[in-house]
Length: 86
Image (cartoon, rainbow, N blue to C red; front, side, top):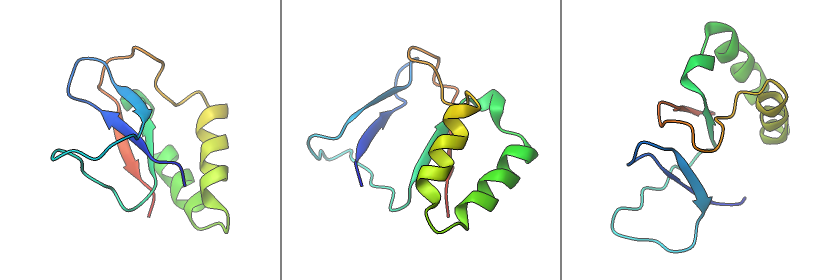
């Protein structure tokens, strides 16, 4: 699985390839989907739960979020939220 760094410290959400661990690095042991805060609805959460129970859940969730245009755009304010896929 490819690791990435999600930086929400500034006004703009930054997602970059993981290169080195620092003292501030926090590892999330589950996949994380970053979506625009305005996209979080009960309908979305129900769909994410349903997809999480599939055998190959990560590609399914990725396709769902990408096709629905739910990923935040580059340069979007960091009002995005993280959904943990259990």
